[in-house]
Length: 285
Ligand code: GLU
Image (cartoon, rainbow, N blue to C red):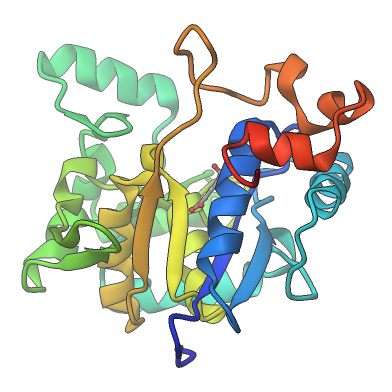
């Protein structure tokens, strides 16, 4: 990991190009940009592993809007879709350690199993996968894979947590935080359509880009527990984390990319200056 000095950090803003940036993104980007400190480094990373939702048009617009806001960043911009090999390598490492298993379940099979079992333990992302495919024999797995059955790769959470000491991660403000990745259950590390998932790609990229301080919204704070577990098994150092508040509209609703009215570009089209937009996002004067 890159050495930092005089409070300088390597930070990043990692949007998914599924829509235009809004004030909440501007807040997040500016938070990470300012957190790099003097002599620090700022990266913009395009998290575009989801081919059904991500569009090049949005990637271009995001970079243009960030530029308009006055931000500059390291080049080239890392686009996750161009680095699938890196995620496959990490996935293989997890597989060699015996921490993965293929899961052939469809969404409806999982739903039915949960309904029939009469219990539905929930994690931070919803109902926990009930472990149907964890019990499939290795012969059966081989046969299904041989027959080309679509599958995801899941982390065997119990195995992954059993072979390490309780983990912690560092929060810039709160200090040491206990990681409890178990509450997520067997998360997906490789999807059916792409050989990675959010959890895996973000962990690999933060490592490869030498990120020392991860700034992101508080909605992603629970996910840090999973990322810490992956860092442990992949032999990565753990950066410091800072999860910022989420910007809400006047009715208290969290901003989302669907809120066309407050995208950076609509504000710009309506004659706002970048200085005014930065102020709206809570920065500048
Ligand atoms: N790509 C994620 C998003 O747009 C952010 C991931 C992260 O910062 O770790 O919500």
